[in-house]
Length: 443
Image (cartoon, rainbow, N blue to C red; front, side):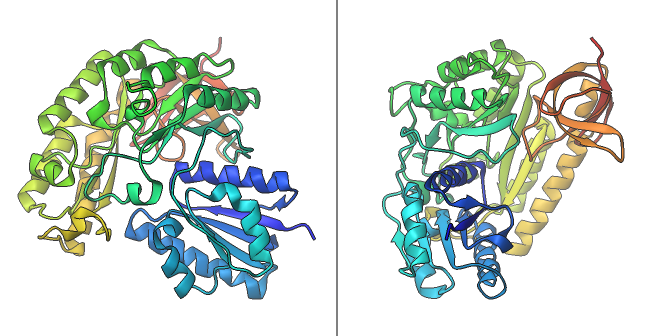
């Protein structure tokens, strides 16, 4: 019997790419991929293990899906990803519902793991978390046909005291420019127009492989691939954001004027304990330089509240920083005490209720900050990548270059004969809290 496989992806876009590779491998083997878990004879859960909330979601998802062994067709439940890389022994000992696990460096063996799990042998493939993305592997893209993600590096060397990524993903490893371009060309031939280049630390790209910062060259070369119209960058570590990178983003019209730069905090004492690069003055100077050279750039950041030792005064100064800098997009996380990280051993841990209050307070402040940010686009004509049509409201919905898929704002477009998946010109007429609306600009 041909196995029917459903893959459930939790966590970040980097996990999504790994799931798409596993999909390609099992499809090539001749298994049938199914969208509905109730149909599946094998389910693969690609987990996240980054923070407590993500780990809890992963465990709950595993338990929920295991019930299909009684009510559905499920024969084998396989768990992959960061959670397995970090907790392989605990998962196999404490969760008999699991029929096999695979780590972040071994998922290319998924076909063999499926075969073993179906036979009842409970395989464990968790070794070194170093996966070789140089090898051309089949990949079934699950995002809409016009946009997708491409990994340019894996792992991280920054060793921030709060972060478990190096434990789960290993040391920083850049892919070669040639392997990235080969993948982008394949995707472009399939109709992809927007490429989002992703890594835990994209600005460090090339330093291990070429012994120099190669991100500007990579951005330019990806933009030269026929069919690619937008090149987007995630996640830009501030310590390696060079002047050359700023100039490249400013001068290449295909590179989205969008910077996703996780800063984590503003206060020097907290940044030092986090082992983050530079200090607040450096951050302010970098943001000012980016805005000076890339007019209209959209800046997204993420911040952590409740880090050990964060005082009420630290938090108030963080609020002042957010008000003064005026980020276009902002994500806030409460500090998660991750075992095995240096920060877990720090004194002065902040109570959970205080963390939650600070997170809510900061997000409410950000709502006020951005109320007028979108108004700068009113009257302008923006390129909008149209993603869907809402028949009830008779509007098309898409994104400008200033918003990333899934996480940022949208543009509501009035018009006719607009093609889904195409970039169309839209004159912006209204700005809302996070979104814009406008009318198709007739040529």
